Length: 267
Image (cartoon, rainbow, N blue to C red; front, top):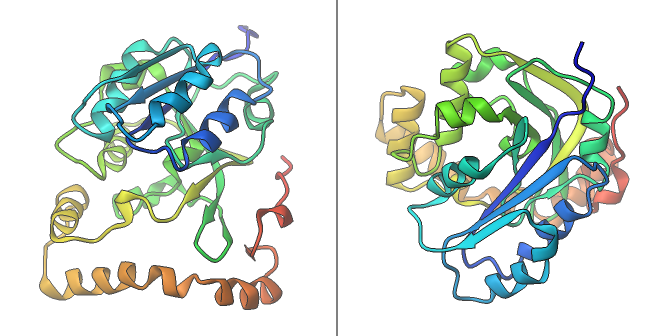
């Protein structure tokens, strides 16, 4: 039986992310798990992002700054350089739950599954909300887990790169096709990431709606588009500080103004 630890590749892709790239870099380079490599793909930033990346270059296995075709092309580019057993995508603005996440998930353990995934916190403007993933069989209509809280076998990502025709949902399309093809998934009882609730994939424009319809095999309707537009338009208002102040008292295990209330899960 192979008892060697898994080597993990962590990837960060970014573009003009000087405002929040450093917290992501620190979150990765401060991981206590020893068998890790770090790859950073910048899309040719002009706002100072590259200067921040250079500060951490001695802790980064490979990095490059050059124009690319978007998030998923950058991810595919990173995978070509990956030598780990599993890849995690922790993109600019997102962070690991704490410095021991990789150690908690992988130290002394061997996995055979194609995808390992866990829980996460969602960072809204008003506070933090807990999210535990669903069973994978809901993937025919929804993403069951947060991409930042997953680890995908590197060989699979090399064999079937993200479809860059999808600019927002290529990860969902990838995982859905993998599930339909009989891929294996395993949930671990750990918080993996904290991600920003207001990323590009949460915006609901006509282009975004059209991509959702293609990815999820929806029949497009004006009524459905308006419903989703309203849902995303007022997302900030629904999850304002007042909401977390009230909900944090009523459901303290699920909502909090600060992340300090949440502690790592036990197996």
